Amino acid sequence: MAIDIDVLEHRRSFSDPAGGIIESFVELEVGGARTVGVLSQPIYGSSSSTGWVISHSFGPDWLGLLMTEVSVARALAAAGDRVLRFQCQGYGDSAEVWTEPTVSTHLRDTRDAIGALRSMTDVERIGAIGCRMGGAVAALLADEGQIDRLVLVAPAVSGERYARELLRVRAIAGISSASEERAMSIEELREALGRAGGLSIKGFLLTDTMVADLERVDLLRQLRGSHGDVLIVQVSIGTTPQSSLGKLAAHLETLGANVTSEIVTDPVAPRFGIDHFQVVDRGVEVDVMRELYGALSSRIVSWADRTAEPGGQR
Amino acid sequence: MKEYPVFVPAGDEYVGAVVTVPDSDPRGVVVLVTGGGGAPRSHRYGLWTKIARELAVRDIASVRTEWPGVGDSTGVARMEMANLPVAETAQVARFAMDVTGTERLGLVGNCGGARTSLQVAIHHLPCDALALITLRLMTDAPRPSAAMRGVRTAASRLPGPIEKVARTVYRKRKGTMQRRDALTDSLTAAAARADVLILEPDSALAGPIPLVVRDVVRRGTPRRVVLEDLGAKSLQEIETREQQVQLIARVTDWFDECFPGSERGSAMAIAAEEESA
Image 1 (cartoon, one colour):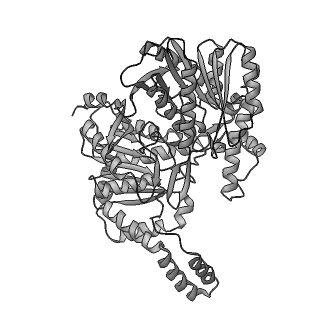
Image 2 (cartoon, chains in turn blue, green):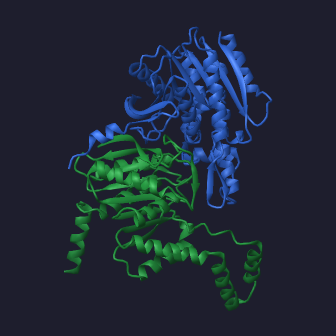
Image 3 (cartoon, chains in turn purple, blue):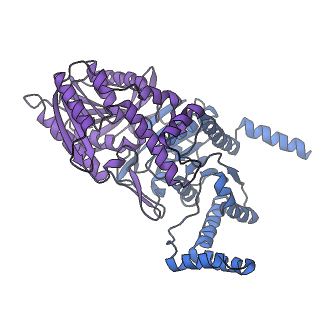
C-alpha cells in the first residue's frame, strides 16, 4: 500500500481568505539538520521587500510564547509581509529533537533560517522578531549585519537575569505544589541543577550547561555593530519604563540605531513567556494572553508601516 | 522514515499535525493527542516527536496533532474537560488512516488527550490499541458544596464503621462514584475492541483508578486492560532523560505488541505457546 503523497503535499498549506493569508509548512535545513517552519504570506501576493524571521525564545519559553509568535506572524502577513517561523534544533519537530539547545545553536539555526527565507522568496530586507531570549538572539544576529529591522519584545538584556527567571518558575511551581521537598530557593535550585544535571521546567529539561550558556548573554556588552530600525516593546502591568530596556535602547542609539520604545500593558503581563493557559473554572482552561497577542501584533504592524521605506516598501 | 507536516481541515479550522511514515508499509497508525495547557503537537520535551520516530522504526505510522487554537492550528484555544476536541481528533485520525492506507488504529494521549482518545475510540473510529497517560477521574460534575465538604470533615471524625458508611454516602453525593462508574463504563466499552494501557503516576496508583481497572477486568472484557506506573509525577515533570527514554519505550512497545506483524508480538506468542505446551 502506497502512502498518498499527493494528499500530504496538498495539505501542507491552507488559505484563510477572511484573514487574507496563506500559510505553508516548509522544510528547512538549520544547523545541518532538517526542521519544520511555517511561511505566512498575504493571500494575493506580497509587494513588500521585507521578509521577517521569528527568532523563537529559549527552553520552556518556546511553549509559552508560541501563540504570541503565531499571532504576530499572521498579523504581519495580513498586512502584506512574508514571515517565516521555524523551530531550532532541540525543539518540537526538529530532526535533532534530543539535542540540548544553547544560545549558540539558536544563533546558528536562526542564521540558517534567514538564509532559507532569502532563498525561498525574493525579499530584499530581513526583519527579525524575538520575544525574551529570542529577542536577545535576534539582536545578536543584527549585530552581525544580518538584519535590517529588529523587533524586540520584552528582550532578555541579561542572560544571567533571564536564567534566574527560568529557575524562579520552577521555584514557584515547587511552592505551589505544597511539597516540602520541592519548595527550594533559586540558589538551591541552581545547586540542585549542578548536582542532578537537569531540572524540569514547564515540560523542558533545563541543564547546567544551558544555564551557564545563557548566563554569558549580556546585550549591553555584546552589541557593538551598527543597527537600523529597532522596536523595543515592554510588556508589563503598568506604564513605568523598565530600566534594563531603557539602557538597551540608549545603547543601541549610540550604535546608530533608530529606536522606538513602546509599552504594552496587560494584567497578565507577568505571565508573559511562562504560561498562557489559566484555569478559569472547574475543568476549563483558556488562553489568557489573547488580548495581549492582539495588542502586540497591532503595535508591531503599525511600527512596520511607519518605518517602511519611502514608496510603501515595507 | 519520512515526516509530512500538514494542516488537516477539522470543522471550521485547520489543525496542525505531522504525519510520520516508516520506510516499509505501515502496520498501523497511532494518533498522538496532547492534553490541555497549550502544548503543541510535539508535546512537552518533544515526547510525541520522539515516540513518533520510535514507532516508525517498528514500521508503525503516526500523526501527532494539536488542539484547535494551539501551535500552528487555527481557531481559539479553549480546554474544557466537558467539551474535548473529540470530533477534530477523529477527523485527524481518519485523515491519517486514509493517507497511510491502514485501518489499524491506535491512540495515545495524556490527561485531556487521554480522555479525548478514549472518546474517539468509543464513539468515532474502531480502535485497536490505546495508551492513556494520567487518565484523571473527572467529569463536569459540580464541585461539592461547602455544606457537603463540612459533612466530609465531620464524617472523618466518626468511629470506624460509621465513618465508612458516611464516607460512602459522601462520595456518592460528591460524584466520585458517578465518575468512577462513568470511567468504568467508558473503559469497558473501549476494551471491547482495543487493548488498553493506562499509565499513572505513583501517587495515583493509591487512588480510584486501580479500582476502576479492577472493575473493568471483572466485567470480562475481550481485550487487555493494563495499569502501570508512569515512572514520573506527571507528563510535565519528567526530570531525567532516562525517564523520557523509559516512557517512550513503554508506549512504543505497547503498540508494537498490539499491532499484528510485530517481531516482539510473535516472540511473545511463541513463548506463550511453549509455556502452555
